[in-house]
Amino acid sequence: MSFGVYVHWPFCTAKCPYCDFNSHVRAAIDESGWVDGIVSELEWTAAHQVTRPVVETIFFGGGTPSLMSGQSVGRVLQKIAALWPMGNDVEITLEANPASADAARFADYRAAGVNRVSLGVQALNDADLKKLGRLHDVAEAKAALAMAMANFERVSLDLIYARPDQTDAAWRSELKQALAFGTDHLSLYQLTIEPETPYALLHKNGQLHIPDEDLAAGLYETTQELTEAAGLPAYEISNHARLGQESRHNLIYWRYGDYAGVGPGAHGRLALNGQRTATAAIKLPERWRDTVARAGHGFAESTPVSNDEAAREHLLMNLRLSEGLDLAAYEKRWGKAIDTAKIAALREQGFVALDGERLTATPNGRLLLNRVIEALL
Ligand SMILES: C[S@@+](CC[C@H](N)C(=O)[O-])C[C@H]1O[C@@H](n2cnc3c(N)ncnc32)[C@H](O)[C@@H]1O
Ligand code: SF4
Image (cartoon, rainbow, N blue to C red; front, side, top):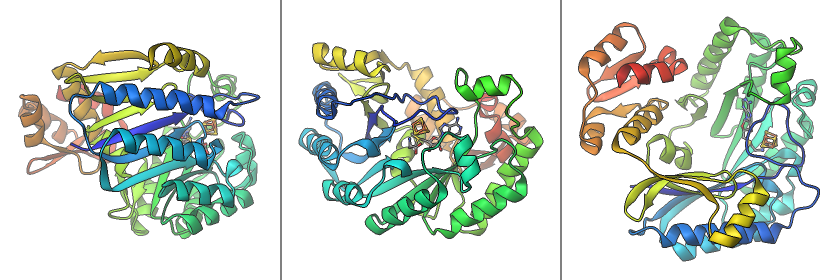
């Protein structure tokens, strides 16, 4: 079973108005103090695992982990290597924001062991970057991308589409530019209006003209068409890669493997004291840090996952992937099969496809995944 470690860095220089990630803006950050907390949580997690899994991937996400120094990243990586056996070719990803990327920092990350960078570019026109509240312009994003590609063999970039007032022609031209950069991985997220964000308020007040359902569906189709033509088809709803360049860390989530999640608000799914457990850390950084100092970890929840819940999560995660679900493996792991009559009904409606033992969600099914899961279980 694959094992990955997720490390959450909860700080950003400014909060983007569309974002509801666990990210916080603070005037001053005692970086080594926060790293102490992450180290404690790693130690606690390793101490409660009965069997010692081999680490195959590590992911620094956020927030903005590119605000961390190379030294802090190195401290976390050394601790992970001291606590668990490491695989042969560990994938170590760090999420970077173009506004906090510089050449020396990238070189330090590389020296610390990072071997993959995921850059939050979001848009390739200055007016839209401004509307998204980004602190960088297109030129800075391109410079950061060039630096990332000079330092790391594996680079991914994030774009958000279905943005306010975006036309299909504009998205086509932007996506073609993004593909021409030549990275082997792209994350292309459709803009989601998240509750309680400044964008939700603007939207409610009619000040945000986001694409309607038909245009958004068209933009999604354009995305599939252009990425497939460029040799980076979707391997997950929003993630595209050349064959073999998929994010191995994210594949652990979607294949329903085991991962530890440390840092404020991080989630994990792993065997603790022999029981599959869902962990979720306290979200507010200061409360998390105080709790870690007292208890050794900041997990607000550490809940046993029942067989039924785990089977449901497994199905939901697998159907996000274009490779889908292996029905035989699912039955073997959870001791129950998915009802063939339910599969047949959804096939007839065009929501799933079946190829031997492989069940996949069709593009239409992926757009309504929660309903597909309910109908299957
Ligand atoms: C943690 S951020 C990436 C690193 C860094 N914080 C940054 O923004 O450059 C993860 C990604 O989620 C995406 N994202 C965040 N909020 C979103 C939303 N409301 N709709 C669509 N994508 C979103 C953005 O593409 C962003 O790059
Ligand atoms: S999109 Fe990235 S930089 Fe912006 S607030 Fe969210 S995590 Fe921070």
